Length: 555
Image 1 (tube, rainbow, N blue to C red):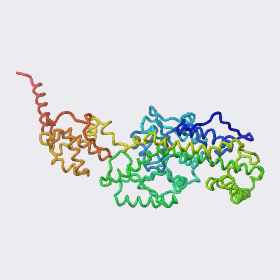
Image 2: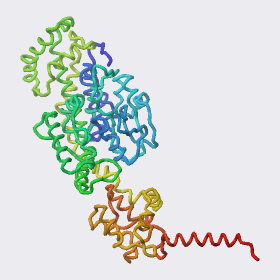
Image 3: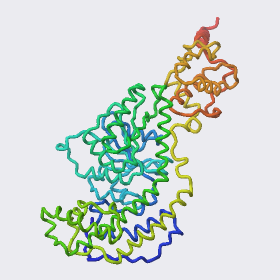
């Protein structure tokens, strides 16, 4: 935050902006940099409203922010979405994430210190250096070769803990950091553990910070498959009621329930409900790619109107107060009375402003009493004001016309994020994966326990085992038809492995293919029988007999 020493700051455009020859990203960047930013810098508005927008921010992917109590499953949910671990990731029942992680796309997996990343001109959040070196020590960037990260940036944060503020020492302003990420986020996923519904004082403070941005929030009740249906409904109602009071809104927040990890759902009766909630959640996340342009356009408008209001107030206050008067205790009250009773009314009437476009009296007081502000000097020149007013009155209309065309140019987010495991059956799995799963789960002994006849099992022999899975008869029939290729109603041991693997895949939320991929097909053993217990014993006996015979000397 540098002080502006000159009495006036002038801005002269070297070219005429033609928005019809640009897209919404380039036009917004140029308009903001040439017509809004000079006024913000002249008034040092970053003192009270945070850092300005940088060039890289306009063209960057949307930001998905994860917040919530510790051990609620935030990092696990990110891994579930990415289908991979990000470098530096830590998961555990204790508070394991000790820093903010900014997860971006990169050609190889690597973790990079934020001290380095903030100097990269392509990094959209360079302004976090303003929070100081202590915060940069507690923030890192994780680069992953995951295609999902081409369409979004994810921020993973440490869990909110119930701490004693008197004994907790932080060398940076954590609330300001969280507020910064919340303002920049296009969606905020607030994750709660189904077993930890009590909202601590620190969590309430977080909710208060989030409240103005409630429209961005997606509430998730995680680990929901570990309790019964009745308990889940009670937990969902309790969380909805608590958040409704905390958000202080008329409409109750919608709570998505599910179990966002790579393990099978424990209660199959709740599977369809979880799939439905997950589809709604992913749909909201996918919409970020269209909403991001609207959000940035609105942010430019907001910043322009706030800069205009502060510039008008600044010009009005020049000469009416001396710098030493701002040090008096009564100045805040006097300024508030003058603003609310006189100045604001004149500005609304003369410049046709809306009351909602004017800052609060406290924000004006905070601004003019800053060490970087001199209330006795004019901060914004007439030329700067004319440029800004022209942007608000005329250029915004031209810029707004680009928005529908940009959104219709391509179907943003159509193939962006699906239920994370759906495509694995077809693309990433092969027979070796099935064979390894059979070894880990001892499916060979399970096969033998069903007493196969000549190394083959029928549907009747497997009926009890299949019914215990909890899957519908249609799903089980489809799995059987995929595996039993010669349609004789019997499967060998390798095909038995494949049936078990497909059942486990469906229970993890994957979709069955219409036709079994070639890579998943077991070796051609259907014409041959797999070895039974009796066959294995006979084979071992014959081998020992042959060995003894070879050792016996001939007479």
